[in-house]
Image (cartoon, rainbow, N blue to C red; front, side, top):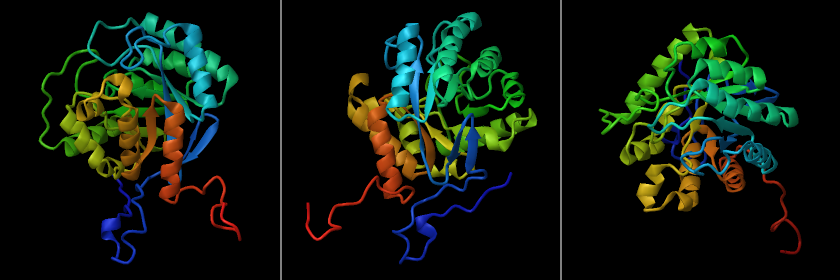
Length: 318
């Protein structure tokens, strides 16, 4: 498969080594996703999380009720989210959520949000039937956290104009995966993702509609997730926009000895390091704080201009 030539500080002459950030070698940097266009060579998208489940990992059912889920979606848009990810079944091991029930949870929310916003809408599902109905309702991305466990999912996406997020995970859906082991977690994750890209493109999904997620914490322990974050550029080097779903994950809680309600600072730090290492979408719970952190990181990396310039630019210092 084709690869680009990444611009790494370590490969530059000493005089320039500290001036140029790492830029991922994106094969197709400009992406049209629904009604919005992203140039991932110069911007990072903030993906908000809205889970319509009674037992969601983070909010424990706060947005399970239909009205609360819809309100949370529009609040995220108002706070600056570029993208809203709607889920109707948790990843964690447990009893399967019937397809009919997952459809009842996510499709009405997608319809309501699409009726009032052109924001990118993704649906977190591994079921091809849910994907089909979600796309018909207005979703523009299918976020599969199971690495194409349903062989019919990629063909469903291929038959539409939707984008596909391919995530690394090894367990069968909603099944435990104790004591995960990798010879080299980053190399193993990269090989898995490339294999799934080949499956997706063979099913008709074009490269310009594929995004990769290394799957922080998904069948990985804290040391694995820390190493993935530290070496995320090796995933970004694959040439596809990289999604970092780091918000409030257990690797942050274990690192900081912090319960789920006290992981914001760690989540923002993990998101910023991921962006510096090439992530171009970050999946976050606290939208206001995340948008500020992302926009500041973009400016530091030279990807965006400050909102305004005034300090020390006039005859009088304010």
